[in-house]
Image 1 (cartoon, rainbow, N blue to C red):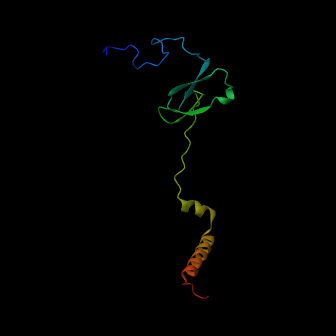
Image 2 (tube, rainbow, N blue to C red):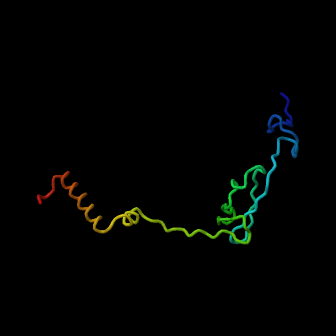
Image 3 (cartoon, rainbow, N blue to C red):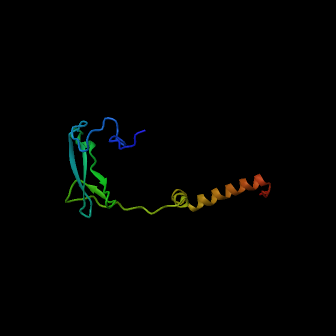
Length: 121
């Protein structure tokens, strides 16, 4: 067995020399700039034949997480985040106090009947 270096160890079959530029087809593309409220620019590349309505108007800035738009002078404002609501908060939005009391009483009555502890009314 011959020990020695193999020039192709770790290379893909068909891989050419490093930096070879004529491998593959490079599609035409356009660079679109987006700016966030802090003035940071992010450039995204899209296919040149992509219709303008398919290119997003707003993206999330990778550096700040803020929304970034295509208009440098008028970047999008940060959307106001709604506070977390509990399940109870959503229920209270849908029911009045009277409805809640009535539903609770019905549920308790059904529970008492199942347990056999319901009182005769």
